[in-house]
Image 1: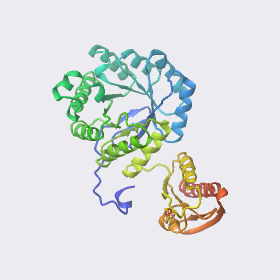
Image 2: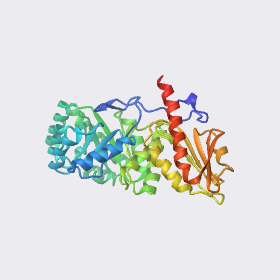
Image 3: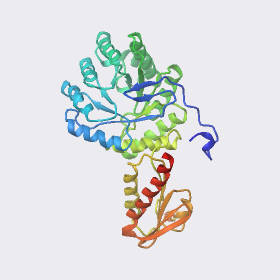
Image 4: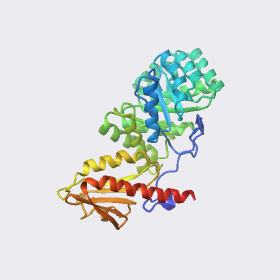
Length: 372
Ligand code: SF4
């Protein structure tokens, strides 16, 4: 949506910050490209079939780039078989051992995430960068408040935003000096305000694409709130080229939350927008289960469509007038409507399937039509 299409935006949202474009496999990151959504597997990378299965599930709900942990050589070698069975680019996440980075790239990783400060010194970093250059593999320079260089930490009195930015600039310079500028940068802190401040400072000093996220954000509620505040603020500021919401949950939920943040910040619109009421004393159907199942099914749909799941007919249809398809509960029944038009009245036990029938019908009408 651009500003002309938006009925409520007053134009105060900042333009996207200009960054260079890099490619992770065939996915463009930075420049004018859409903010790319990533996640990270929580399977054992050495377990190829579980890892592939999880990546496929994540891809189905909109994950565009996947990262896997590479704690040892067996995990690095497993990448060879993993990439044969997936269609989104894979990033290898490496700490401490430069050889794991080299083997991961040789095995087919399309990006690597390293902290140049903990990879074993300049000479070893050079070996990693040489292979990255030869194979055109971008490097994510990942600075983390927990693994800040001792001298920088001492000078700033701790992992302050200024300290994190100094570390990022130092590490960017290391890699660039070695002749490789396909870089994206992340600064991770578990503190929301520090995260926002750090990225704001960094975006003034560097035009490399930024990977944004809050590290160790927490479970579903805390993690969603922290990520929404931090990433939402940055996206509204025009900062961020790729993002990961990190939750102590199934990574599929990270993807769902990431797209909701992008939608709320009006940076990207993927999949259905679901309006649902909180329920009240008027609710006479099991709306929680209905809304949960609609949300679960909706994750598989990439097209933008507006769905409403409302507890009653008093306010339901009115509040959800702009929905493509909506439902409103009654006593043991539900009404399915399209805009203001009532389509049918069905028993509660049939409500979900009839509602979903109409969702699929509208999807076909809207998106088949566009293809012609
Ligand atoms: S839509 Fe109906 S049931 Fe839901 S909160 Fe509003 S009045 Fe209550």
